[in-house]
Image 1 (cartoon, rainbow, N blue to C red):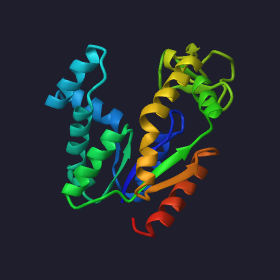
Image 2: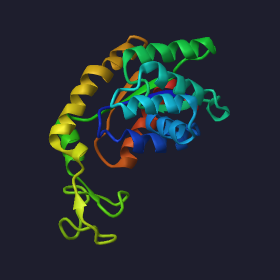
Image 3: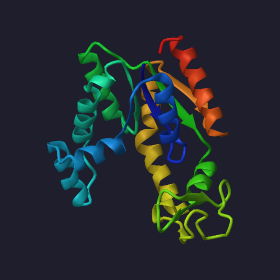
Length: 221
């Protein structure tokens, strides 16, 4: 099964991608992981991407597309994959279609995780991270620390990251609406989009997603 996962920041794409990929026995391919892997391994594409990032510029589509193509050609992805963070705009979506067509393949579904904008802001702006260990994450509403501002695990100071501020979150949502949301219409024209609510417990959203995907593609896994 070949799936693209889309949704605004804070929709829980990374969490859902991990569960869905495991349930469907396909690799989870995220743009963030692709960049980190290529940069840490100092591949030619990684060096190129880093040169743009170091200069404070966006990495061009062709570099991102090349990284994704290289990853999708790995043996574990031959039976399918779940793409998270790629394609990010319509030109990348067109490039993905061309790549798959050249191999005689196509996407099976595009899963759109729907979350109200106010909920996105609440989810992200409410996060608090431990200064000692960034894996210790709390939330002022959903997972509050026992003592405000203090990590339950190690006693470190909890703080709000700059990119979690409400202002930054709203800017990220603007970018999503402008650049990424148009791919939903692009894929709707191909009859590929399945939209589900990403509200509720993680397990409930995963179950909802699995049911929607199976209805869309039949029981094929």
